[in-house]
Length: 309
Image 1 (cartoon, rainbow, N blue to C red):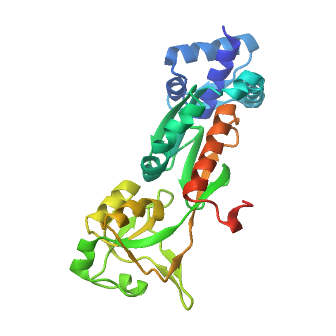
Image 2: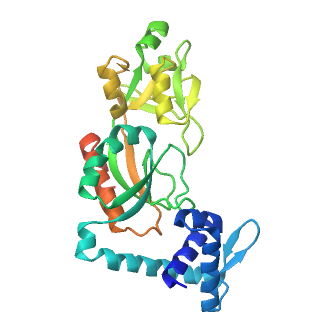
Image 3: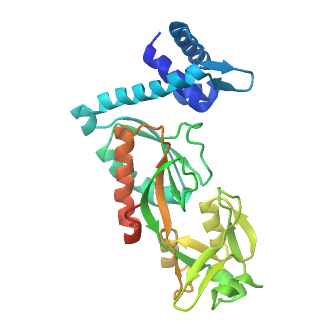
């Protein structure tokens, strides 16, 4: 029995709550993972896991051992990455999840420069706007817009996305150009609704000028839960959009979107990199986060009031 493999397998089963899911993330067979854990229990002469047909639960002894194991695995990773060669050239696989528009328009186009700097890092990039179970899915970090509600995550604010209100020329030709945001609450105007993963609902947007402060939700005929679909709906003339400027810039230049209410201000959307508190910050994860910080400083730097967060 390889004790390192056995401890790693045990830790992943605890985190995933399943031998099957642990095997998938470790790229091992379920049989291999099961045998490693059984061999570990036999060596320790302690039952670490309670198994049922539906779920795997850690025992009291297993919970104590798990806390020691994850510290030991982190120390081993630190020992390897502390070497000058490892620090100079981090290596290994990272599992990252990011919103689809951010991936398509900012992160993926910039990846050649990242790989030129770190050729030995392999990234498994999940592209979605859904809520990711970072422990269950063995994700190293996520990049997300909006205030984070999961206080258990460790988060770093890496950008502030400037927002604007836009509509397609076809929509404005059909319905007319609204002169005031409150017109979006009345017929015949429509917005495209965005269903936030945290709530499954569309939320109002805060807007203000020198004289008024409003929260505008609007009425929609279509609501979606994906950023690319949201943009596509607006370009098709299905309603008014609230968009980060990085998503609207090219379409404005081509005349496909028209900015509205330019004398009104919307609070920028904070952008975070977040990771689980029990996820060790390896050299590869550290350099990826720093790269995202550098990248967003070019596209959407954190505003002064947010720099201390």
